[in-house]
Length: 118
Image 1 (cartoon, one colour):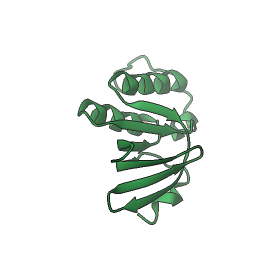
Image 2: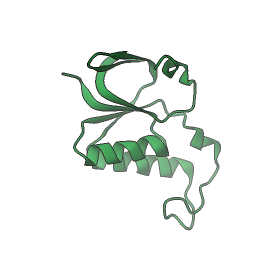
Image 3: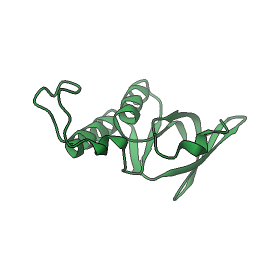
Image 4: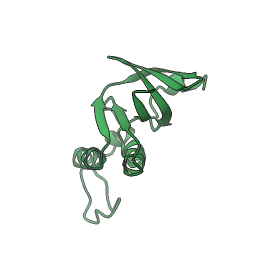
């Protein structure tokens, strides 16, 4: 038995979208987000996902993570440092813990070297 059905690496738009859909599907989903999304390079987001007047990045990220949590995903402030495939899924090393999961969703662009062996 694993700790989670799905572990999503990255809590930006792609990671939160992944978490929303997997949690809605009934999968125990954890998002690990270290808080430095590439989206933060933007000063303002215009007309993205139905915000025609635009939205600032911090508000958007907070709303995306809150939506993921609202549908049942957990969001953790933690950085993934390693992932290893096993016969029964994956072992995921974070800065603070070692977790097991059936599936991994990679939604991070910063230092993805831990994914190369997969």
